[in-house]
Length: 347
Image 1 (cartoon, helix red, strand yellow):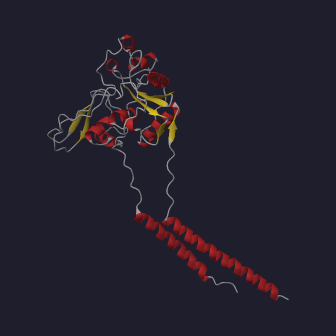
Image 2 (cartoon, rainbow, N blue to C red):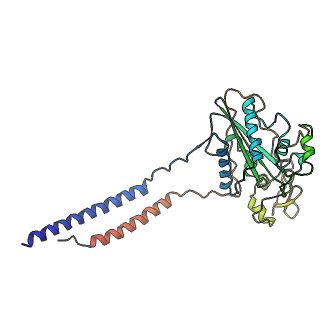
Image 3 (spheres, rainbow, N blue to C red):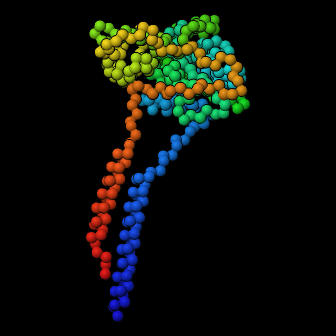
């Protein structure tokens, strides 16, 4: 009377055992297939910039990706950037010019405690552009990839940021304003005089910074650069083909990225060839479009992206690392499989 029960138990165990073996084989095959033929990574979602907050997030994300702290938002810079975006949308002209006064005068009138030599414009910068349809931010826009516009977003000298977005028909207008506040947080004594001076009186002054002229190496091979108005470690490092970290190390600056006008920095050692006397980093005073925008979007053609010299992108894994992963997976499953197969199928 016990034989049927025994046979049923043996049959049940045999079915379970074979099902486990089948599942084990399927797992090995699917794992090897996934390792040998991985699915392509999903494309990074692109952001359609239609609001100032989105533009701020994009710029501060760019700073974080380059090892820089995000800039805090200042209401005066938000107002100046938005009013500039509105002005460009109303006129159809992509420009840094203001209808009343200069950029510096506007910031001072809004109560921003602007640092730097106010007679030279102070420490402030601005990026502007226009696109047909919303700006798709999946990297630095083509019109902002040159040194002057990258400096606006990545300079370590600026302390605050603001952004503005305006729309006119199918065209969108964007402005990013960055500036440095005084250490005390109070306006400079000359602020009142600058605000009431004749607009355009400081014409000819660079909108961004004095071009970086390369210094000639000294007899001992050292290269000393004297910081000029508006220059930052970012712009100096680009001009000399070195990195911010190297300049910081040579001058015992730690992680500090603040430099001041007239400061002498050791930028290179062991230089054997004199730097070209005429080599400069060209910085223009205004954004190129100066005439009414045509029906097509006013958007700069793409240029090579300026990757910050102090940031190295780790190389992507090649075929050798993929093979190593497959070998390890196979070895692990073979070991486990041998242990399973050593267990005899129940009778």
